[in-house]
Length: 361
Ligand SMILES: [Zn+2]
Image (tube, rainbow, N blue to C red; front, top):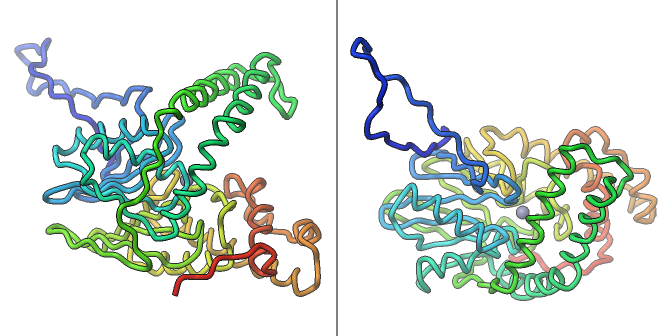
């Protein structure tokens, strides 16, 4: 794997003396601060786009002989357009396929940018349930963003800046203030962009497995069962031994709000068993070994076993949350906030307190 850098060819290098034996090496340009993605060439023709500067959510693209396949489209069409500009720096071939790994807005809301750039023939692919959720949940969430979520967040950030104190009562340092101002600008930009957002659902869905046979490689889409959401897709490239996981694997504690932890264990096992050397996660850097997925699997197995035990003893959810000790996993970034939600989702899944949709056969 290597970091792909934009190479600016200089027409002439000036200032070399007549005695110089070789041109002075020109350092590769540092990507500008405003760049939205770091593009990493993971294998020949396979690129990861790691979100930078507040762009949360990765993307990936695969350059085939005749076209390009993109995985995930970020939260904002404007970010998707930045990603398209990055793709065009690498290849003139058109994007013909877009895969959404799941319905969450930070992986699917930029879909429209691909239709605008490459025409209505762009095939947008997702698992059956992901399409359903995009057409229900995402429409609702977009509305809530305008009426409550974003105005509340803007008010909170403005208050923090005005008071010089964060919501936990901590005085802002200069760095805290700069990052709060940056966040405020990002949230305001999102609110301003929302009127232009059109939920653009998949045009092709599948149940368990779909394979694209291109002249260069097979691109396998798998749905291993319930997991991060009802309709997760894993993209697997057997020739390059690369897996693109969406949020089934992230560098930090995954967002568990729509998850099914009991079945997530077997879904993660299925991913771990695939023969891969590199994973492009939904968030964070490319992973070159199975360490993170094994850590996540270990946590999920232990957490689900502890919740089963608590349920068998007749504990309520509150009692279970207070007594289950998984602090040995606290090194996972975001553990403190994510762990109680994971326990709640597992508790509901095991007791059937929240109706769980049937697993697809
Ligand atoms: Zn995500």
